[in-house]
Image 1: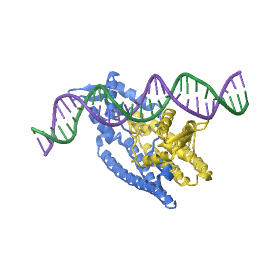
Image 2 (image 1 turned 60 degrees about the vertical axis):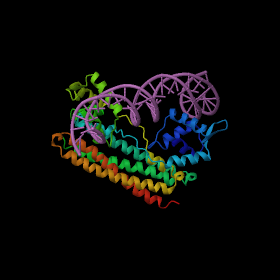
Image 3 (image 1 turned 90 degrees about the horizontal axis):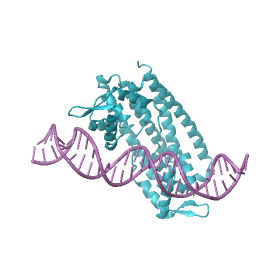
Image 4 (image 1 turned 90 degrees about the vertical axis):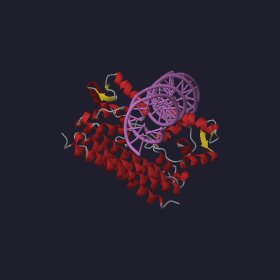
Length: 167
Length: 167
DNA sequence: TCCGTCATGTAATATGTTACATGATTAG
DNA sequence: CTAATCATGTAACATATTACATGACGGA
């Protein structure tokens, strides 16, 4: 779904695909080389993408677009959560309050960092008039990241305050 | 780490462990049967847990607690993101605005639901005086969930408003 | 010439879920 | 007595990452 989706934006090589997924979808999606190339081969076999010219860029076919629409319409399957930060804090009594404070401070700094990256990303998107029809949707994903980062900062502040009363 | 951590709260059978992980850590961690039993066998082999009595509850050893402290102190390794909702919204032009609106409405309802679950969880925790030393840390994880859910609701509202101007 | 990047792919490995097999115990 | 839950475990399968192998090309 991610590979087909990226190819709706523009034709790309597998290598460029990996960069696009990392740089543009990076904050909510990821794929490794080992997934992308076999996926492209399979999609080609099924006629959903074609390999063009000597530079071997991949282009999505009409059938591929139809298939993508099907995939997008399927129910979202939840990925099992694995939040190492929260697991450590939950076990804070064993880990120690001081270490928890450090984790929270780092988490806050990370969230600030992410906010800056979202600003850059939003600017980048706005500066591409050829993708005007996509930008409203793309901005939604950036906005999600921003809301999430702001929430993380507020939570970290509250949590640090709460922990100052412990032990 | 999750298995050892859960056993610091109280000795448990593997079955109870799975329920505790699902019910208490569920909103930020998950383990399946296929992970828990082999992990317990390995932890027993290494002397980090012991199997007691005829009801075979597992108890963490002193060495196990030391090992857990080591594990908790190791750097948090980020899990690759896989957010099916954001991927679909990013490809909103292909999926269609109407479907995006539905996704956002559902996401908002889900977040509301989660808020209620967090309220219940917080009450449950507060009602267990024998775990008083743990509750400050446990409340942090609930608070994280609450902040995240509130952010999701605000984001969904904003996004629905933004999409009303599209097409 | 040599290094970094572009480019494709495979193999080894790691991780994780689901389904199945088995049997005890408990509640209706 | 029978259905649900408790309890442990394994095997098959699915998924995903990392490292490796290969080679082209452009710039310092």
